[in-house]
Image (tube, rainbow, N blue to C red; front, side):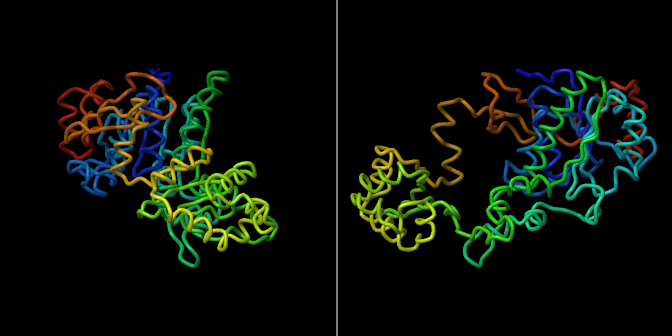
Length: 391
């Protein structure tokens, strides 16, 4: 299933947020033309060399795209970009704040020329506002959005181990573009979408925000445990294995006390009878639960939890995720080409097809000549653009 086949996306993109959004569109069949700087390209290409010499970030978010090198600061480069936009359905950009507008690529100007064009601006903080010109990287936005205030352990804050703010912004850009394409199908009109990393992350902070509503104390930092539901977190078994488990309701709590702890009376102890009670007395209750886990191996503990049943999970390493039996059973790993050879790549979540789109991760400028030729430029013209550093 490639419902976006026939849709053309031009993306002036770098790092994660915009490339993540455009890759999802490409996975659904859109033609995505990734515009990169001649010589250097998207700076995420140089973040690391962990995938056979290529950047892990870049390989992750850039399959199914065409790479066009173009210096849009030069008049001929800007002219070529405008030619592409005249035939495009969607334009995405996440340049530095204000850079697109200064280059004559602001949403108002573009949509005046092309009313049917969907323009998606992705930035750290959005426009207008006192933060609109501030540079924004993932960890900085996690900080501004309050994520670090609830993540970590005790007084020690911790960033999330993934690019939460970039991913959130990329997903809202992706879903907003899909919505705009549907709206354009009804009205014939494009749209201007203004996605900020801050707003995307604050939306995901909904539970802590409302938990701290009207001046109430916020959730405490609780490490790998849940901040307000208990017991819900990691417990170490007697063999050193770690089991993650979660009690979500009173029925599970009673069954857990009877069948796992072998102490049914604890279920009705006034200190533990409701989740609020258990959360308030988590230190004492944690000692009881931990003592029982210490009597078991991790495998024995998981078998007991499964028999109740109580939700539980292994705390997997990256190597174990690569080999996860559920992903293998569902056939979710496929192969994608890269300039350094084929690598495994996860199919787009939700898309159920035996052959998802897995076109290669492009080498810098791999499609420059074919794209320019498609605009009617001759080989001589293209050679000239390359010589001048335009392409």
